[in-house]
Image 1 (cartoon, helix red, strand yellow):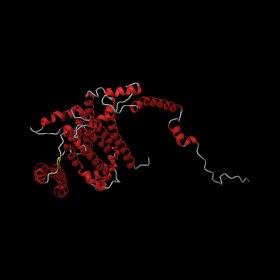
Image 2 (image 1 turned 30 degrees about the vertical axis):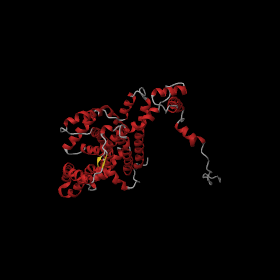
Image 3 (image 1 turned 90 degrees about the horizontal axis):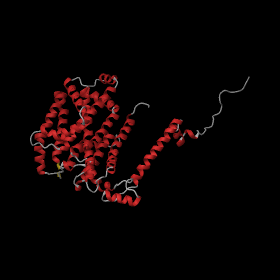
Length: 434
C-alpha cells in the first residue's frame, strides 16, 4: 500500500510575481503593449504627441512677456531667436488681463466682484459637500440677493425688500396650507409676495427705513460690466435658476393636468427649437417693445432671463430622462407608503432621478456656461467681445492666438472643475458593487 499523499502537508512560500505583472512595467504591458496592434498604435500616438508638443511648447514658453505692442514683440523675438512667428507674445495678456477679467468695471470697485466670487464659493460649499457646516446654508439662502447688490450697487433695502417677499410667501404657504389647501396656499403666497414687492416693501423699507438709515453702494451701470466677470455672472445665474425651473417643467410635462402638461410641452419644444442667439436678439431689441412705455429693463437682466429659459428647457428633458429611467416599482412603493405626490417626489422619486441625470445635468451646465460667449454678438463685452476691441487697437492689431488661448484657459478651468465634481458626485452616490 502506497504512503504517497495527494494533499500538500506544508504551505508553499510566497513568491514574487513576475516583473511584467505589477508596477510601471505591468501597467505599460496591460494598457499600452498588450498585443502587437496596440503597441503600433502606442508608438503612432507617441509620435503624434511629440509632433504637436514640439511645436506648441516652444511657442508657449519661448515667448515675449514685456512689450508695449505687437511690433515690439516681434522685434524682441527676432533679436532673441531670429524668428518672430514661432513664439507667443504674452505681453498682450500682461497688458490687458485685468480688462479681460473685469471689462470696464471701475478699478476702485474691483473688490466688489472679487468679494462676490469668494462668497459664491462659500455659499456653494454646503450644497456641493456634506462635510461643510450647515450654518453656511444661511449665506446660501441670502446670496442671490447679495450678488446683485455687490455687482450693481444701490440701496441695500431694495434687495432686503425682495428677500422679505420670498420669506412672506414661504410663511403664507406654511401656515395656511392646512386651512385653504396646498394649491390655495400657493396662490395666496404669490399674491402676498407681489403685493409686498409692489406696494408694501418699497414704501416700508426703500422709502421708510432707507430714508432713516441709508445703506448703499456706489451704483455701477450694466454697460460697465464685461470680461470673464460677465460670463461668470450670466453663467452662475442661468445654472442656478435653470435646475429648479427644469425640475418643475419635467414634472409638468409628466403631469395628468392637461393645461399644465400642454404649457410645459409647448414651452420646452419651442425653446429647444429656437437657437439661443435668436433669443438673445429678442432680449436685446424686441423685449422692450412689449414693455410699458418708460420701462427701463436692464440689458444684462434680459440676457439672464433668456439664457435661463433656454437652459431650463434642456434641463427639463434631461431630468425627464432620469424620471423615465426609474423602475415603475419606485412609484408604486411610494404609493404603498401612503405618501402624497410631493412627498414621494421629494423623498423617493426626484433624488433617484437626479442621481441618474447627473452626467446630463453637468453637460447642460457646461454648455450653458460656454454659450455665454454669444452675448458678444448683441454688444455685451464678454471676453470674446473685449478681444475684438483689443485687436482693433493699433498697438495689438494682428494678434489672435494669445488672446484666444488665454480666454480658452479661463473657460477650461471652470468647465473642467464642473466635470471633475460630477465624477466625484457619481462615485459618492454609487450604491452598486461595480
